[in-house]
Length: 255
Image 1: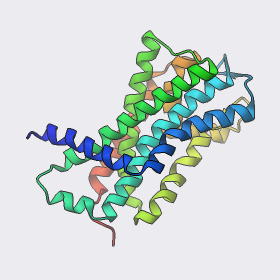
Image 2: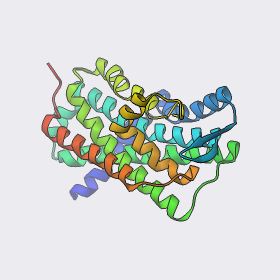
Image 3: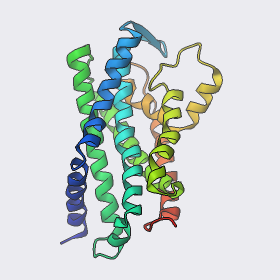
């Protein structure tokens, strides 16, 4: 069997392991939809001016929570599950099998990307049915898909990188959440950033990839200008994460 076939088979094994925890799987898919309903209910269905374009708040939150779903499926899911596998000795035992290390990790990443695309499709479909969100076509859709693909891979790389500073499985959820939750607020995922937003929040959010990722996938939906620089910045963060993971990733439990 070729290495590529082994990687694809690993996708199947990872998928089985994911669905064997139905509670975790349910909330992975439910959280973005829950946040759409909660935020639109709390903040109303009025209009929002974003970069000179006036859009409905429900449209904004459908796209923002789609971005959140991608980050949850790739960054949070991969970082936490990989740490648990490491501390459970699964990664160490895997290194002693004929399965190439890259095939094992590729299986995890591909599965995370599949989850991300499914989450986005469900969230956008939910928005179209219940909030009359218009699904883009043509070039905006292509730009959306490219940003989603680059962002998903980049957040997977950052997830593998952050496992290097997670000491044990118990510390994985708080460390991962502490590293991403503030950025979700600073990047406008949960609260739109308007003209009255303090400049320091804008500056800090611009440094990190979450805001650029959200900008990229929202451009086609809300009608703002698409900037390839957003994609390049997200890709640069992903490349940095990949280099850090290659250097510091551990296959054995921390002692």
